[in-house]
Every structure is written in structure tokens, then in C-alpha cells.
Image (cartoon, rainbow, N blue to C red; front, top):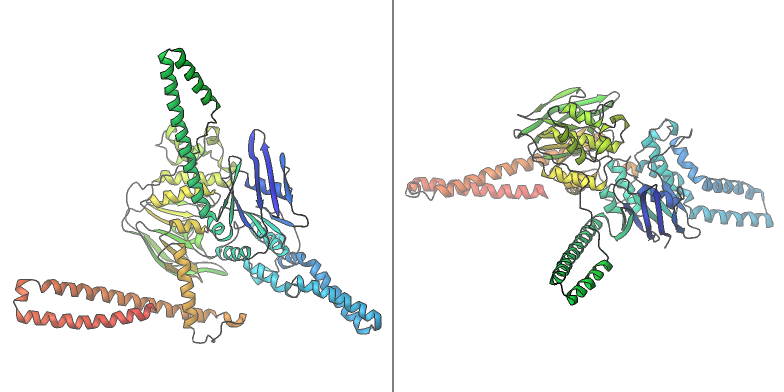
Length: 638
């Protein structure tokens, strides 16, 4: 055991955040702290790190162990470059290296006992230097920075000029390089793209120390953690396994508690009925027995009814009327913000009922595509066409569709003037705005509260084509699950951008991957996309005629030029088109084969020798051609 929290109690006024919370962390254990927004997750981290005192209880850290903490929001100020800022973590190693260089110079001119002393000192320093991976400090810093999404051209940027998200990534890099015995991370994936999140997952899974994570990224938690610490109404419960294991066990536990509650209520009701019956007999013996049962009831520890699952928000998305089958057609779409070109010649279609996730690294232009489709930005070239009876509902992650000067109530009443005050209040209550909350101004709301207002407007729009830009940002896990359920029950069409891989996995029926200024289509959810992308990567590597027959490639050899990548992508597209063409031919011939079989059962045909011979010859030729196509299809699939 490396860390123990014992009977931690914390309250803010009358609100109890943590009530006798106890749990422990083993060495190298990867743990997540989960709970709804405001449950006390960040508070618990601050108590562990010592930034916030507990009202009662204690945190015990094993002697000699170190702890590092990444808060959600960073207020870093430094005139260092990004690289130099991470280099500050290596100052002890750099000092050892500098001392070793001094000793090397001194040993050139020393002799006798002095030389021996210098050599012993040098050997000791060299051993320490090697233990701390001193010979690889530069590549280690470079690897972490690239893993967190910085390019080499970013390394020379000054920290003070960075955005809040970039500063958070720099802080995360410093923490990872410092390698404490316990790492505490509060929402570490908030400012990372998918590639960086995948890199961080691998880093943490292989990390030799313990890790405690607060995160709403369920896919990330599934990959990294082996234990879940849940905070629910101040009570802390520990579950073994990843997030999916926890969700299943929690549901089972809640069902068991609910059944126990219902059984007890049934027993209480039964006893009360027996007591009433005994008293109605109005006999001394019966009354004594009734009183005895009443005492038994008074001593019974009455179970509390478990909180209802998913009672936080109530989202019901339903279009007023259906659209045509063709919802969106995009042709030759291009957009640049000179000198950067985001994408060129994009072409794709969306059909009614599809839920399409648009994914890609930060800065590739995903949000720009959504803004073009909603008329917020013009395209440089190309066009898009909406299908018949298509009505768009747009969720903007920056909430520009909201009016900052209006109250929450005015935002809905002005957008939907036919709604009664009661209806508006009921809708807002479903999104957790009750009492005087409805009179808060939009500009005074938190990001999560603005998100809930946008979702409320979206629900009232009754649109049949939802375009959503990062709809899960600022939502806690329970709220995300509610939104997932609403989208899966929605009978309209959805196009959304999200970096939440679990959310994509649960809702998407198709994925469009925006990379290298073009789109790749995957029919399936996120797991399918990962599987197929790996297959395509292997195919690309195998298709490269210049690829050397070795499993170890140098960095320069492993990087294909842009032209080579385009050529290989063209080869792949050609094979995919050939496959599609062959499948179409097979379908046509198989249909004709069935048609011939049906014709041969008709009396006017099978009694006509000439016609039978003609059809039999056609069928024989058709089967021969099919056999050839089957072989070609199989070869292409392999």
C-alpha cells in the first residue's frame, strides 16, 4: 500500500461533500475517481495533495514516496520556451552531466591518488546518471512533447504566449517527466486530441508508479484503470475493474439494494397490517402481541430507497416530421485559412437515420465543416445540398447560438414564443434549471450550464437533422449516458464531432475520419474504426514495394513521403472500388440466375425445348463467370 485515505470528512457549510471516505492505493495501481459534477472528485484530489484541509480523517502517504498533481486549470507563467520548460524537470540530471564533464577534464591532468579519487567520483556519478536515464533525456523530452501533440516547430514557442489548453499540456508533460511515485490527474484528456489521448493511455498503462485519475472519458478509463472509487452523495465505494466493470457492478448493486428496500417495505406493511388486526381484536393478549411487534418495528433499521438511475436530465429528441432519404450531399468542399489548407475536394453523403461521427486530429477542420453546413462560415469551393424536408438543429460547442445578455428563461421563450411559461419551466427543470436558476443570465453560466441550455433548445427544435459539435463537453458521465440513450432512440439523422471515443462507440453508425485534407469512410462504431484502420495500416505497409524486409526501421525509413502516402492511398481506393464493382456484378448475375430458375418452372418455358436449351446455356455461362468473380472477390478481400 502506497497511499491510504482514512475516514475523510469534508463539508462546505451544510453541504457534506465527503462523509467518512476511506480507500487505499497499492503501488503501480491505476485508479479512477468517478461521480457526477459537484460530487467532490476534485476536492478529494486537493485533500490528498494537501491543497485543501479535511475537516476530519487523515491521508497517509508511505514514507519516502513522492506525489505529483495536475489540476484542471493551469495558471502557468514562464518566459521559457516549451522545450526549456520541460528541461527544468531534468535540472538534476543536467547538473550531474555538467559535473561529469568537469571531472573528465580534471582526470586528463591528474595522477596517483587524486586520479583514483576523481575516477571513483566519476563512476558514482555515471551510475546515477545511467539509472536516471541521463543519456536519453533529450529524446525523452521530445517523445513526451510529440506524444502530447506538440510539433518540433512548437518547441521554441514561449510558454507565456500559449493558450490555456497548451499550458495544461506543458504542465502534464512536466509531471510525466518528473515520474513521481503517485500521479494525480484531474481531467487530463480535456485538451488532448485522439492521438495524444491514445499516447497518454499507453504511457500510463506502462507507468511504474501509481496513478489516480479524475476523468469523464470512459473509453480512457476502460483502457487505463483497474479500480474505481465512486463518490455518491458523500459516500465513497470502491469497485475493482475498469469503467465497464464498475457500471455493471453498480447497476447490479443498485438492483440488489432496491430489491432489499422493496422487500423491507413489504415486510413493514405486512407487520403494520398484523398489528392493526391484533389491536382490532381488542383482547389483552392480542394487544400485548401488537405492542411487541411495534417495538420490533421501532428497532428495525429502515433502508433508504436507492436513488433512481438516470434522473438528472430528461432528454427526449424527436423530429416533428421525417426528412427525405437523402439528407445531405457534399461535393468538392474546400476551405483554407491561409497559409493553412484545412481540406480540399471533400465529397460525402448522409442518409436518413444515420448517426455519423466526424473525427480527426485537432486543427484538421471538423468544426469548420459543421459551421459551413450551418451557414456560419462560407466554403472556399464546392457546395452542399440538403434533402427534402430537412430541418437542422445545431449544437455549437462555443454556444454562439445563445444570447449572452438574455436570461435562461428568455433564451427559450424568445426562441419558441408559442410555448407557455409552464411548458418552458418544465423543460428547464428537466435540464436541472429550477427556481431562480431560470433567471440567470447566459453570460453568468458555467460551460456545463450553457451546454444544458443548448440541449434544451435542441430538444424543443424538433429538428430531423441534428448537427452537434462536441455535445458531451462539460457533461458528467451520467448526463453523457442520458444523451447517448436519447440519440440512440432518435428517429432522425445525426452528424456530430466529438473526441469522446466511448460516446462515439455507443452512438455512431458510421465514421468519417478527416486526415491529410481528405475523408475516409468507415461503416461502424469507434471499435470498428480502430480495427479497420489498423488493417489499412498493415495493408499500406505490405503494399509498399520499397519497404525493406525487416521489423526494425529507422525513423527516416519508417516515414513515407506525402507523395508515397497518396500513391498508396490511391492503390487502396482502386482495390476498394474493384471490390465494390465485383460485388455489384455478382449481385446482378446471382439475381439473373434465380430469375432463370424461376423461368424454367413455368409451363410455357419448360415445354419449349428451344427456350430451355437457350436458358440452360445462359445459366451455365453465368455460373462459370460467377465462379471466376468469386475467386477474384476472395483474392481482393485477402
